[in-house]
Amino acid sequence: MFRGGQLAPMQWSSGPQANFTSEESTPWLPLHPNYITRNVASTADQLKLFRKLTEMKRNEDIFSAEYSNSRTSLMHTLAVRFSVPFEDEPLEYEWYYNKCGLLAARTILGDVLLIANFGTDTLGFKDNLKCQDGESNVHFFTADYIQKQIDIVLSTNNLHGDRERIQDLVLEAGDAIIGRFFI
Image (tube, rainbow, N blue to C red; front, side, top):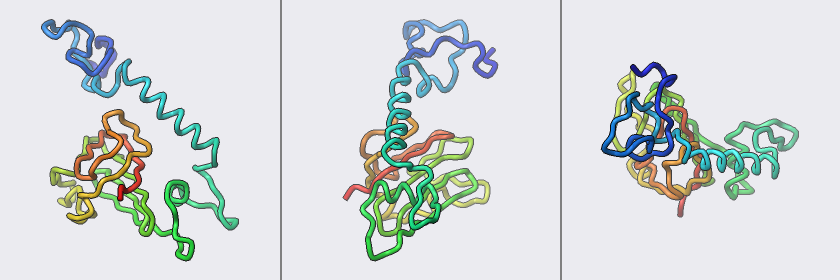
């Protein structure tokens, strides 16, 4: 019996049977449901993510920056770091959140988008899922906006490509993406 992952075959890859045994065989213990994203083969991608975050932190203190003697939020710092802000306009951004745990933040005049899934379920933008309050997952994205493409700058999940349309994104619980709008 699967009991929280204590007893499960080694997850070598996202292939059939987690590459623990041949495709025709069935392991004597059930596979953990997360074997597609959490496996030995994906470890290199996770290390690459941590290296990229470390490099960003070394280049500039991205998580705690000060501008004009005032501390700023992470989103503001990301926007300054990844976009070309308009010099004569203050940097503004919008935050969106729903009861499913989906959070999105975007710069109004820049080109940065942050999307995170703080919920417990996998959430997508293509299907019009409803949250506990009956609100759509994507109610804060207009039909035109959800068609836009973003270049993925950072992703906590190795299932995303370098460029994705917002409506094609799927975020597992705990996943986050930082992207720049593709023009």
